[in-house]
Length: 337
Length: 275
Image (cartoon, rainbow over all chains, first blue to last red; front, side, top):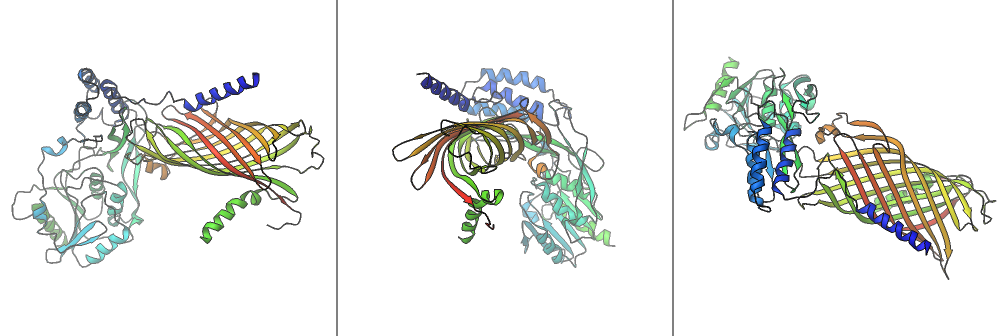
């Protein structure tokens, strides 16, 4: 009898052990107040621009908790809209809310700026092109200038692709790299595309991690070093980078780096910013929130979240030609004189 | 196919390669296991994930010195050692909101020595000893942004204890075993909570620290039954592993229960054997 009881107690103890859940786990919940509270906490402790943007995050908490308390439970669409509205106050293109039925995004960072890009006008220049990896390229201006269009830093390419592009442009007087409407992607691709324009390794910026839960808890600035050996081919002729407001995130970083390349000029509109490297986390209802988490700075330690001003500001106005490409062509010709 | 055969051969002969001594008998156990588990990794997500895991492992037991005097007389104590390697895959662990999946792989290896007492004609055996465990676990949440992968490395000096009782059927002999291991002190390596996954692999330093019961709890135990048939020997059992550790900002929990099936065999490395 004693043995039987002992075995029974052992089995009960084992089942308790395997069934236990961590106290640290965030429990699943569709409750609007719990989800708004969790979302507010994530941004409060992990978002890197609360202080920088002068947002009264506590006031936002009070406002949205009150609104959440009025929501009906299990009205997921209403809860999503409320969460998205709260996130909109950050005015950040890197902030998104992902659910099974919708994706929230903010457009305030480019809405009021000129588009400075028209695919139909671009097609007047970008025709009979080749595609190396995800790089579209062709010679323009009667073959005197190389034109390279890269639509997204999420699309991969390799050093060999770049080598083919430069081989094709070997006789050109200069190169135009068009990253307008490029919404960003991998930082690694930004390094790779910038490498041919640097002859030696150099610090091209800094980043700063959020190391604690306070709005100003940051690490010291850590250098971001460009490895020039990523590309064996070096371009030593004029290069013009075209950008507009929707050149965002990794593209913004690329533009920031290219300002320090030899023979480079930035032409177009101010870039979109997105200097905060995004990360993500989950809410109690299982939705995912993406937010800026790591601050990035340029070589002079200036925050690049607000965007990079071009060397030559051009706003597109013509209906029959791309004013920004035309300006880039002139810049290259002037530099060759 | 030849490669696969070679890998299988290597795997089966691993204990021999590692512990070859002349005239010594080895007890080798090759096991497959399947079970359910729970994982919390707050680097990746604040939510817990649960699902199925599958594993394969091999362990070997061997006296330090084959002593003919021990034999059936029992009552004598002796030192022996045990080694094990194991791979466990997590497949489609899902969170409680059913909105995201976690996958991962865990590699573990260990070696321990124990002191064994025998009573009742060797039927009852009790053993205790130290055990050194090294584990590496990598997990992936593919939906995440810049925090896709997390990993941890832990080295633990553990205390190991066990008891086994042998009894006989008509044509079969049985042995019921219970084994428990728990950590004492060790060394952890975890990512920093603010690190992006690709910084981890770029060499941005994580958190390396000494671990013990104050910040790291590991309990592994298994209850198994060995069945000795005329031409083969098999092991059936259940295994439970509970690992719980954290820092100020991160918290990891692994709680797994598995059913295991293993084949056992004994073999002897003879004098003058060449490996």
